[in-house]
Image (cartoon, one colour):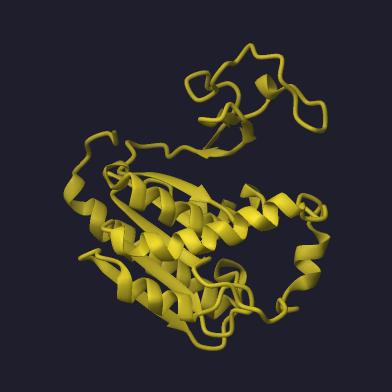
Length: 237
């Protein structure tokens, strides 16, 4: 079941007067407050039984957490793992390299290690364009600068990465160059690292053709299950 504002243990500063850009009080929405004091909308999926792992989903630029509901529900009930996609993958890599003790593992789908100079694929553009929650605002210069800085920081951080990870990458990804996946595998010092390349697949593997998406879900399920099996039934930290 999905938790919401009725779960006060999840909602920081419940009585805060802060509002979203749409003027909705954050106290009425599931949210978190980051280290910079920024209020960020989020969603929680809570299993009915005792959780075996706590999984944080870091989505890509322009996306929203609702696009991961199918995957999140599959993972419900499966220490601390991170799932990330696109520029969320870059954030996860940088954070795990800086604070390896905070995570038990990462699942990376098409992470931003090397940007692909080619244009984005038109595959399933109709679904993407019809989603009213997708951000279509023009990118600010400061965002582009920070993104370029992040890419250079990621490459420098790879030799510091020791966290176990599963890396899933489409060979035809036109946003995040698949060469970045091989670079990550080569430079990361992680002893437990797995790479699976999906030939002909594009950037958003969890929204691909059914045979690709089903395989992605299976790989993630198996990888997470195998690494949480030894954790027993103890509550996550």
